[in-house]
Length: 126
Image 1 (cartoon, one colour):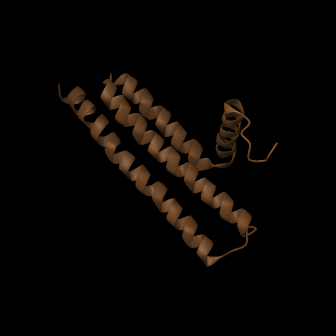
Image 2: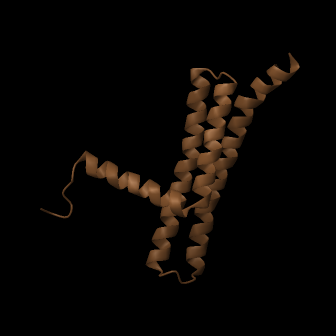
C-alpha cells in the first residue's frame, strides 16, 4: 500500500481530531478564542438570537478559530523547518500570520458589537 493511499474517512477524522487536540494543548490563544466563542454562543442563547444571527455568529467565531489554526500551522512548520533558530524572514512570516488572526478577531468583535449591541440596547432602553 502506498503512503499516499487513503485510510478512509474514520482515519482522516482521527487525524483531524488529533490536530485539534494538539492545538488545544499547545496554543493558549486557541483556547482563549474557543472560550470567547462559547461565551458568545451562550450570550446569543440568553438574548434569544434568531437563526440568521446564530449563523453570522458561528461564521464569525469559526473565522477567528480557523485563522488561529492556520497561524499555528505556519508557526509549527517554520519552527520545524528552521529548527527553532532565529530568522528575520521567519519572524516576518509569523508576524504576518499573527496579523491575519488580529484582523479576524477585530472583524468578529465588530460583528459581535452589531449582533449584541442592538439586542442589549433594546433590552436596557425598553
